[in-house]
Image (spheres, rainbow, N blue to C red):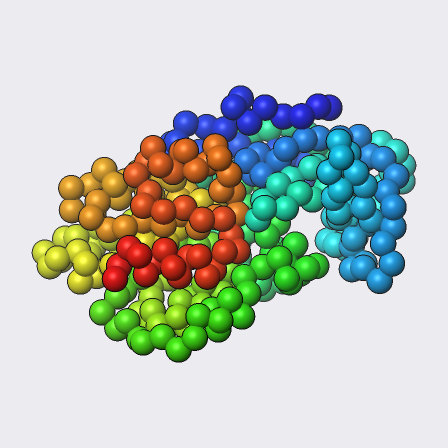
Length: 305
C-alpha cells in the first residue's frame, strides 16, 4: 500500500465530519483519524532499541525517514499476531513527529459525522486519563478511537506540553479581566493547557469537552444581552472532538454577527500546511501545533492584550 494523497481524503472545511481508518488488533475494532495518517505499509522487521518503553518495538527507516515503531497490541495488553509478516504499519504524523503503529490489519476508511462520535464512559480504558478518546458508530459497528497523543505522551513525556516553557517566561501579572474558553476533549491535555495558562497569568478559564459544549456556552452568553467579551475574551479549540469538531465550531463562531469578534486559536496536533489553510478559510485568528505551549501563550497575549 502506498502513500496516501491527503488532497483526496481531507474533507471540506467546517462540515463537522471526519474520516476514520478502521484497523483491528486481536479481532477488536479501533480507529484513527485519517488526517493523522500518511501511509500504510506491510510489516517489516525493525531494529530493536535497548532500554526503551516495552511497547516500543524498535526503529526503521522507510524513504530516508527514521521513525519509531510502536507495538499497539503490547501497549493495549492484547494478544500478539500469530504471523507478524501479515501485519500492518500505520505511518502517522502529528505533534510534528512521524511514528509507525504496528497493528494486525486495516479494514478501510469510514466517513462519519462527529455527531455520531461519543465520549466514552470514564471507566473505559483506564479512567479519566484513559486512551479511548471517543466511540464512533458506523454501519452497526462501534469503533474505539484511540487517543494517540496520550499514547505517545505515555511513552515519551518530553513530546508533550512542557511546563518549563511557561516557567521560562518569568513572573507575569494575573489577567483577571481575561476569560478564556477552552474546547478540548482530552482530559490530560485540557488540564495541561489550563495549568499552563494559569501559570502564565490567565487565571479565568472555562473548560468544555467538545465543540458543541463550547458552542452552547457561547449561544447562552450571547443571549444574556451583555457584551460577549464579558463572558469570553478568547476561544482555544482543538480540531478532533466528539459531537462537534474545532473547524465546525470556528465556522459557526466566525459566521455569527455577535460572536465573530471573539478571537479563535486552533491548537491541535493536526496542524500542517493543509490544515492551516483550512483554518484560515474559516477565519481562525491563530493556529498552532501542539505542544507549542509557550507560543500559545504569546499568541494569547497578542490577541487579548
